[in-house]
Image (tube, rainbow, N blue to C red; front, top):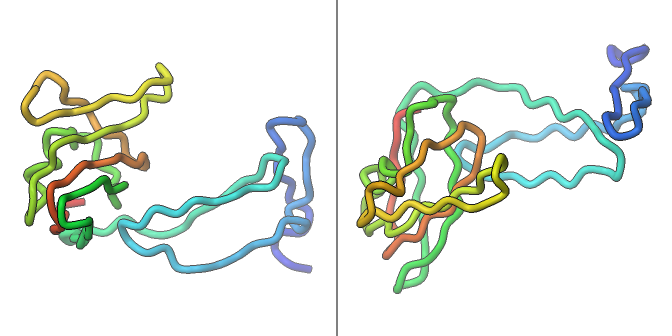
Length: 143
């Protein structure tokens, strides 16, 4: 008998319990500072992620076309004190001209423009953000 035998997962949409052993598990390594999209079945499922948050400086090379472009980023961190205004100082090799995030509460996008400091907003751990950069470079931050 495996260790999932007898355990149930609550399907929040149907309010029914599904045997844990009927769910297929796929194990793979999560690469730091990489965005993964998971396609779930039509019924609600639980996705457990295990691991640790790094403590050393994190760095990611970003490559865009010669005239710049948009990049999706996420931080491998649980910090709650990172603002959109911090991203331009974390990026070397080009300039960050916009930071965009989706606000789930309002259903709108919020945009930070370094030329308009009042547009700054707090970044949420676990969320992805779009940045517009003028050239390829490196994003470096402390987790």
